[in-house]
Image (cartoon, rainbow, N blue to C red; front, side):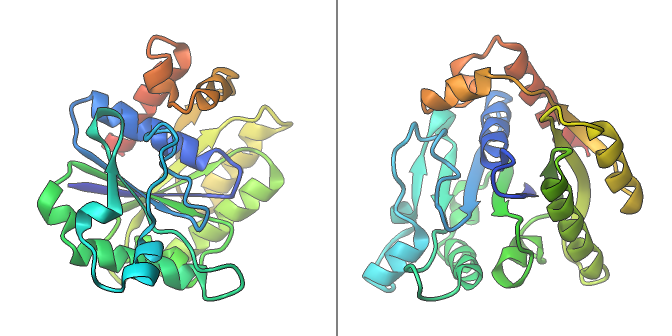
Length: 248
């Protein structure tokens, strides 16, 4: 089993990228689990074609302990197993603490033992890297962390914070930095800025995604590009990225 945590600033295309990676891996014959670790609980919508998943935190609030693993998951495209951690009630509780609770509950209910996946993706908001938002990096969850960024300044800033957090966890048996995924926005000096980030943290760009409007067309259909436009250049880019992540 390979377990990857994908981090990035909100709005950088993280969930879209993770969902297309999940779809690409499933097309490669892999059994895939995708776990959304964002309070918005929208990581898996392209995999489930917009169908809502009852979040783990909603189940805990409503049913305490009286629910099963099957209540926490939904099968999507190519039988990808989808789960959403969810978040606290607005104004109440800590979203980071909620992620800790949700991931522990999924493990406790036997997600990994029952389904024995080949690949697990944790889709994690990277605007802050504290408390529960760092949970997927910890021992027993992800093996490697990949960071999605463009050349936009705030995206680079968030990526640097995530890299710093991984460095601070060195020596504890936590996940290692697998590399940077460049999701192009075609901004000025994009390659220069991302390469400087890699140099600062002694890492590399493991894969690149071009900017393509077909991504938005697929999202309007509530599907991944890999499913909606399998013969497109963009679908081929996601498949190539999946292989690069797998081999990183």
